[in-house]
Length: 478
View 1 (cartoon, rainbow, N blue to C red):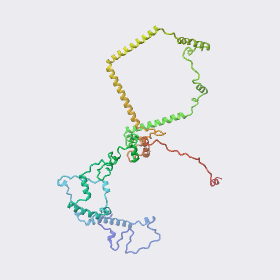
View 2 (cartoon, helix red, strand yellow):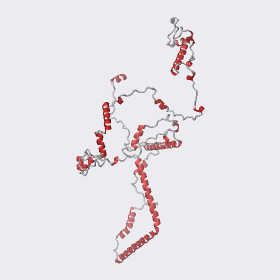
View 3 (cartoon, rainbow, N blue to C red):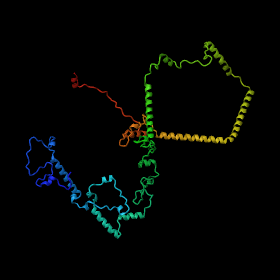
View 4 (spheres, rainbow, N blue to C red):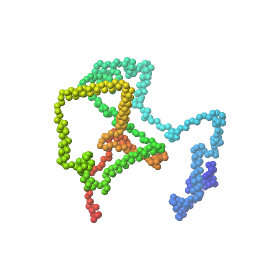
């Protein structure tokens, strides 16, 4: 590369033979030679090697030298060789050499602030339309006029009435039907219960109010409470992070494994119920007959007959039944009691009742010495009732966050979004997204009892599909 202050040799040799700025410029003193017919064009691939010579190199060096000259002129105002030393060098007079304390460094602006700053130093054009005010001249004249009048003590009518109203506030006029519409009325809240516009209707009949005034719709109580206590956005477990700890990731893997195990057991149970029985498990003719006769034949009772004794003939069995029934018939027909027997029974009943009352009185007196045990029993009973109450409250809270049955389908928990240990990303940039935001929001609405669980509608064809063979197709197949 040529020095910045030097001139190329070809340019300094002769002023008459000075080459142009382009690489393909020729000596002007020489006549242009005629092109030989065997050479091709320079912009073709064939002419690359043919036209690569010292002239092309000289043109490149000259172009670089001119670019350096232009850059020096732009940055330094001229060539470096012509500049004095004072403009190129300076004496370092820092605070350390002078023995002064080092000043704190200024805070540099952020890179983003430097990027957002405008590159051009030319200020933006002024938006004239934003400063234009309708009737601006007229308003300025009025302001000047009122400034002059204010110096004399004259105040506009609006301000005078406002000051008068603030100094003498109007009294609340409750009497009169038009107290709410009178100009001298005070300020009030139209949504408050003490609205003067509604005072004329106070104490009126419900039917009169229904016919003369539009009553607000009463908000039902079910709209005052949320359908579910679950938050709209649930925070996932720490194992679902892009850089989780080992324990949290293993806990999430265990949760996903248990959910998959439950699903697999349900599929296996259904498969067992639908499987055709094997040859060993298939019912035979004897087992089918035994199943049909189940409950029809009474089993023999445990006793002498159950111990292996032979069954008795029906005549003996009938005699045994009649002999067993004879004492019943004898006891059924009782003799009439005498007066002495009745007195004895009455005295025995009275004696038994007196003994029971004495026993109850004795036990009641004994309870005075059992106050500590009774107090302990009461405490245990109260503790048991409190424990039952806490259990009911916990169950009620658990039921409040569970999805309810709103339709014919039950709510099904979505699959756990989990990545295996080999799929964990090293950084957030390489993280692979799991799940779907739309599906997650749809499941959240179902879980919070805002919409019922749904399934995708199945397309059911109303008419069966009809196939028609076209004539052109039939001609090809023939």
